[in-house]
Image (tube, rainbow over all chains, first blue to last red; front, side):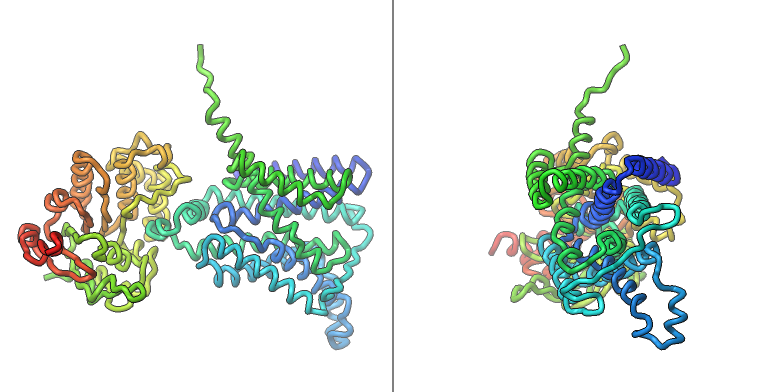
Length: 337
Length: 245
């Protein structure tokens, strides 16, 4: 399937889901769907570095929170233009602020991408568990910085009040849901393009054997930096609309462990070898967690993830996609009589 | 006399207190077939790793095709025409045999040509290389399906896919049977006849003697002999090093 057709198919599916939820006449569907879509972006982003290159990133929550706090920063700036700038500058900036969420998503992507570049430069000479620990440390460092940064709310958090409704979309959550569909399309298209490109070959050689990759002329460090920037930027983009979704952001929610755990578990359960795996894993786990939240308790969410992860590591280490691929390979081909 | 293709000057490498290479000099002319031998732990693989950029030497220099390589990392040296195979085959396990060959074609040959090489040309070269090592029929299979000798051949074909001027074959025949060794020697000679200079590191003396035009001997990180194979194996210091006298 060619890329424009792939994008079109995603857009049609996205529109169909949107209209279906709209038909239910209850915004809860959009709230729940938004979370699942957010996890699709996070899982796909994680898979670019973790699945394609084999570098396990435990700092997803850090990149996600960077996007969220970029939005909080610009939101708070818009709220205090008069205090921060002279009267004339504030009047001028008043035409720009409040910055629309799609632009904030881009800002979040740029900030998280740049942090990804810096982190990559410092840590990508590490391998395996050492790299994983370094990314975990990054999230802790970022959280400490945010906790001590009063402008974005510090430890007490910050309120971000979205408007009640948006023209065309109606309720604000429907607008955020539509934006998240666009982000999913961007993330999945990006992942699929990588897989089918020279870059994808390079990423796979890094995952398989870095020394042999270098001997084949693959610039491993440069490719790993590209993967870190892309992965970080997509995670930041997923986090940017979060303050508008939740209304109140504090470090505990933005840097929540569940983002790190889910963004690893979803591709592992779905399968890390291609773009479909994180999509399947995120839909499955995201939906199960939403079901648990409304039927039992959200406290069980991480338990569900943990149990499923253990089960899949034992039964299907290559995830659902790997399981299907193995099954298709073993299936006897029909021969004409 | 033209400048050598590879010139190693006073190369030294230490691992902590252990001196792996001690002021080694080596010169290889274009088109030559050089055998590099030495007992286990003599520094052969360390020398290859320093030449190809996998390890960084503390002292000395490596000049290749008139260019100093010091400071260049491994992939940059590969792109300049210096390829290697590994002592233990290191195929990309998640890729098919053909995809393994395609990696250096994409990242070295195409990159060298500024990506002005067509997909068709790269595919033709890939088939040609698979044919060279008699693996055409297994192009769509995975390395786990290969026998030991086929794995060695894949390793050599992948190194050749980088279109090298110099190929360093690091113990490409270890663990192979008599006929398989002859197979690999014939393959290396064919590659040399195609214009590739080859340094062969090997313990199997039968293969070394039939392949090499010149023999270099390393012992405890030092070069102790360099000359015609028939002369070198009679050298008392070489005999002493191998027999432990």
